[in-house]
Amino acid sequence: MPQPQSRESIYKRYVPALVAESSDKPAYWFVFLAGTDRLLLKEGAGLLAVPAAAAAEELGVAASRSLYLGTLDGSPCYAAEAPKETQPLPGTDFFPLRPLYERMDEDLFHLAGRALQMLAWDDTHRFCGRCGSTLTLADKDRAKVCPNCGLSHYPRISPAVITAILKDGRILLAHAAHFQNDMYGLIAGFAEPGETLEDCVRRETMEEVGIALGEIRYFGSQQWPFPHSLMIGFIAEYAGGEIEVDGEEIAHAAWFGPGELPNIPPKVSIARKMIDWYAEEYGGTGGA
Image (cartoon, rainbow, N blue to C red):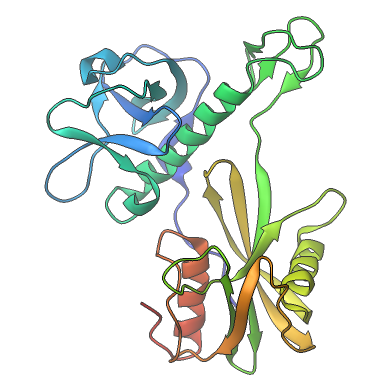
């Protein structure tokens, strides 16, 4: 039986907060180029580093928006958006966030994801969806409040399930139409109103590959800030039916043994963690 992911909680180091307190430590600045997932980092040997400074201006950034995130190891943390024309200072550059998983401290990577999500929320929730008034930041919650009608607007999080389906020691892997490099991954999809996560697992599996499932077990979860998903992983046992792909989202799907895995997702994704768990549990060495 799979065990939930054992990664230590970020909250051992990170304390979320709404209001900045005075600190003698320079702040971490998670600066993203406007409209992108490109994060400003200091270049150098080894791990890439999030720049620290008392203010964004010290990093050559005239931030168009910024949000306080809390503290990491006692240092203040801010999310900031840099205008598209921003030119990074020497020794720094903007890097796409997704490939940075193995090049950054893991907690900093996940906090960068939080920063990206918060900036996207701040940008898309400037006006009340009910009356159109300009929103203001709430005092006690991570939310925005309409001063006219009182409606609260919280950051959007979209739960999505992702499932490793097992049959006789093999795993079901699927090639989505938009995947590049002949990559194969797991069945996934967003939860819909009125269904449980387990219901979502069964529905998505039937819709995409036409098979029924037996026992479903929780594996773990991962934030996926592109732009606001929460991935919830499950291991499921095959119960019946033949693979019949939908031809829209899924172009091809098949059963694979642990020693014959195709090109699979990179290590940044929970999909890869689940496939690696399968390969180890069933005696293989994993994919490329």
